[in-house]
Amino acid sequence: MKIWLDGGLQDIESARVSVFDHGLTVGDGIFETVKTVNGRPFALTRHLDRLARSARGLGLPEPDLDEVRRACAAVIEANPMPLGRLRITFTGGHGPLGSDRGEHGPTLVVALGDTTRRPDSTAVITVPWTRNERGALTGLKTTSYAENVVALARAREQGASEALFGNTVGRLCEGTGSNVFVVLDGEIHTPPVASGCLAGITRALAVEWTGAAETDLPMDVLQRADEVFLTSTLRDVQGVRRVDDRELPGAPGPVTAKAMRIFDEHAAADLDP
Picture 1: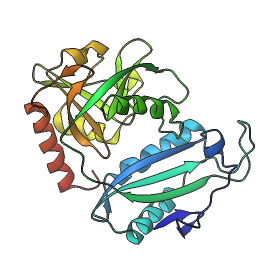
Picture 2 (picture 1 turned 180 degrees about the horizontal axis):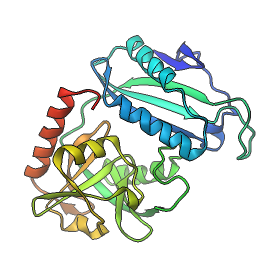
Picture 3 (picture 1 turned 30 degrees about the vertical axis):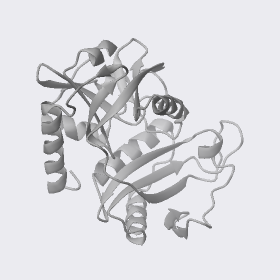
Picture 4 (picture 1 turned 90 degrees about the horizontal axis):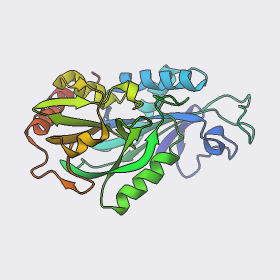
């Protein structure tokens, strides 16, 4: 297995990042997860645009996107697999043990692992913790993921694959690594970015391709929606069959199933939409 580190390919067994890397010591980093299909990345341009936006928002140096593209291509070529999870990580680099950044420059790591297609439906829970729609990291895809780790662990304990957050004013926001959509009277809705959710790449494509509305939604919409589904890089569009104790029999429902078909058709026609 080969990864990209310090400007070139390295064996995963011998590749090393400093124990003083700011991404490790204080979570000062950003990342993207990109799906690869038969050796080709999906929506890479959109992911790299968001990587650059996250870097600006976090105050990191602008990543060299040409280098990132070369790194992605090299790693994909070195690790052939039918369906992969390509992870691009960009951190503040070697720094002091406190929150101040060092002068050594950023660290870029690109790695690839194999994955499998997700089931057509899944179970989710809601959690009591909130997303801060006005926080310093709101809308940035950073490596500060401990809140998501805690919430996802609770979901796993309850037989679910995802946990959904509200925001500080009680509105529906997002999952730990997904965006959430609901179907009301045949129409598809998803929380707006102003709710504090990440501007997901798959979310944006689903909105564009299905005509979903961006709607400010209360948390209790999950208890009355006709259908619920999730979107993310590796889920694509995935129906929800249970929210907490509420069963949604027949998931994915007809609107979700149509959204799944539309997404699959568009994605197959253009790997970099």
